[in-house]
Length: 358
Image (cartoon, rainbow, N blue to C red; front, side):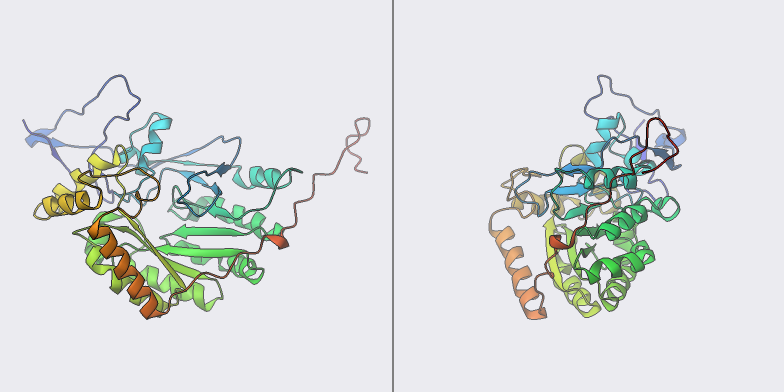
């Protein structure tokens, strides 16, 4: 009996493969008619993190520190390079990544503690790089908002990458941060095709609504840029100029792009998704992607993993360069670390009189 995966409603991944650290491989037995049914409920759990700041040493990433309020992401983007990190939790990078979400409930307190250390040196913090800080759970939990409140209070510079209109909820804090040159926002937008977006990133804000978010941020005086990510050869690469033009008209100041990345388990998950949703284009997309990576589906080397190499990579780079120059894109306003004011330490309490604060 052949396995016929059913695309769970509102999910990107089609299956629940074991992570690479498991010693045993498990397989769900097909139901009637050979269909494989997977659980589809969302489970949200607290994450008892001891620290929230991560140091980055990758030379091709433009930040040295990041903060991720969540692990896993309900947006369900099938291309998400962070999916393999769920294996560290003993979970599947497939459906588990978008179903089982962990939130760092003490993120704001831990951040304030780290910012208050005497040895701390202020550098911009990238918020929500691994998983989206404005995914659906944030609407109720408000972990990201609590982090922004700390950042605004101490005037700490940060960058945000999101594909959610929920960021508009925090316009008050973002406007305050922008007034001190302490924030940059990038909206991620890989396609303007609503139908494709619904399959590619099922629970993310729809493309035209993201353009509206760019407009609202721009009109509020918040520096906002567009990130065409990922560019999928043979599927979305023809949209590059259109996305850049619509985003510029909406108020985007700066632009960037990232080629589709397929590290570890993401490769098989994406190919399974591609064959299911776009069977007629699957081989073309795979061949085009290999042309960007010297015959492989992915090249993890710094410098080429996000851009590729060879004639097609050069052509894509040139198209981006010509389009951004024609449309008047430029750099983002520089963030200002000099305005940072470390949080005050908690008041000392007397050992003899614990209720007395000197």
